[in-house]
Length: 407
Image 1 (cartoon, rainbow, N blue to C red):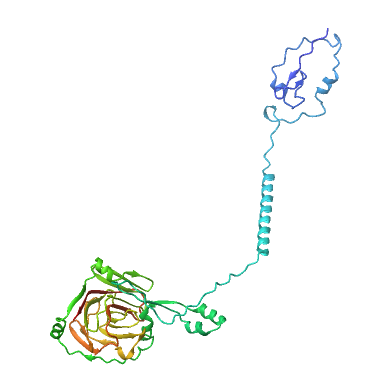
Image 2 (cartoon, one colour):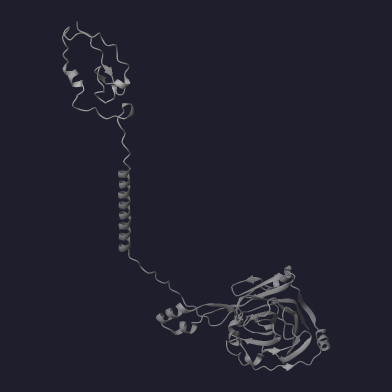
């Protein structure tokens, strides 16, 4: 009697139907015997002669394991072995990509560098400025006037040279901003000895009683304490530029000189005539530097003419006269020593008595000199501050108690 054939076994991994006695899936190689249930009960043994042997079909023969071919290797649980990630190949691909990127960038830089044409910038044309004479800056009535001037070292070249020579001269020129009086006084403080001056003042002989008796006949026109009131601000300018500065501070007038050979003055915008008296208190906020401060009088409206009575910070004083923007040596004294002067931060009181035929100069109630009348028929009065060669930084002088009297 023929025994029934056991049913096929389905692969638990891929679901393929396999012969009941197959050890591995014919599709994926999964181990069937390890995953299947225990073998079913075997039919009773029969003698080989009891029944004829079943002849396997062609499909069964193909599915049967080939004893000459070893089963495929499998990992734990019958799974195919996993292979490692190909890191070597990934690194090699990354290195090749980086080399390619570097080559592309280098080629692009070489192309743009070799093909670009560099054109040097051409200097812009510069026009030459020729200043024939310094001019004053007009101020509104009632305010102090400050004059400035632009000077160009190549004025002569610019006036007569050809176009090519002018361009070369302009390229090396430097425009220097000064006050109007600075250009005139430039010859006064050269690197070598001071210029020869011709005014020898007559030594003072008057007493304090003489002074009081004279000015007692005058009337006061202005007494300025620099209290920063509206009237004070209308008379005295406040400004700050690269060369000089002026400001009202703590009930006095502070004038700052920011370099050597700077001159500035502020005047009351009133013509005082040919006879008047001016008093001024001065001091040096910055000591030990070559600066001066004093009274400016007979200053003309255009700003190029005036007389300056100044004291130094080393017990010296000087009178300077400027006409048409130039120093007048015959009306200028040298630096005259005076022991009565206060040096350092001490206060000095200057008086000027301007009369039609002479001028009296007083310092700290001492009549120091009498000089001939100025070449001008009167004018305005105010404060003068200047610096000489050797000043290496900003220096400030102080003015206070400005008084004007006239007959």
